[in-house]
Length: 124
Figure 1 (tube, one colour):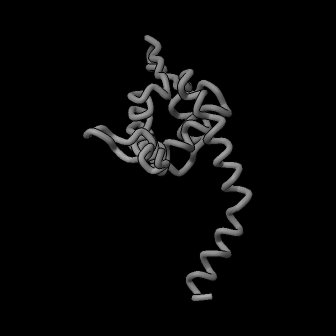
Figure 2 (figure 1 turned 120 degrees about the vertical axis):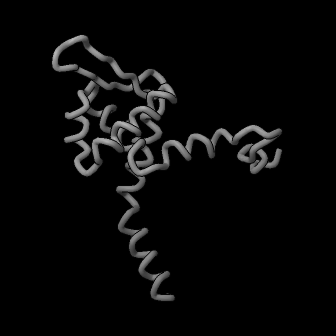
């Protein structure tokens, strides 16, 4: 079997790999999953402060997308003021080791990648 056939859309259906990468390849999704995986259940403001440079609107949008994909669960408590907590689902936890591996790989190889980029840009 041609390995590339596996990653091409077939019969009008979307390619699973591309579909997942579209979701997780944005600026924030992977980071949110990694933070929730490390810290466990978090309230919105804890998550916002834990990530730092994400806007509240972008955090809200990204959490909704992750919730729609079944990676994050949202629990609302009937309190005043409202209390909302986010945590990884079983599916989110199953993705975590793969994202942690990618994060480790990036940390290990980032300096070499920067060096390669500089050489390429310089025409070496």
